[in-house]
Image 1 (cartoon, rainbow, N blue to C red):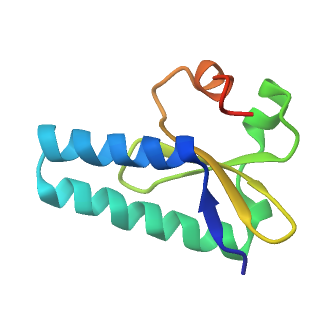
Image 2 (tube, one colour; image 1 turned 60 degrees about the vertical axis):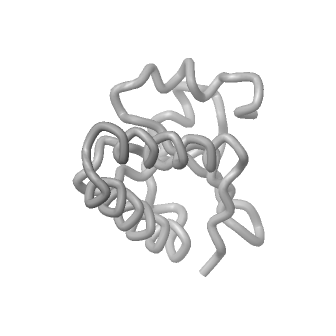
Length: 107
């Protein structure tokens, strides 16, 4: 099992999603998001290759995988490293994923 370590961009994505849910929904929704994220990171940490590589070829980012959150429209984007899981972004699935992944800080 490898630890999942979020990049600054991923941490910012998570903070923004929680802030939005607290502002627009309810504390329970924010807690549900945190729980769904933790439940997504567990299998990613145990079996990193099980995430979809669909965006890897589309974005020309070898090794990039993604895993959807249950009951939330967010997706975890990550790359397996020798000693950890490099969590790149946690994005809402309805966003323009290629544009968000090619932000200057994403690579």
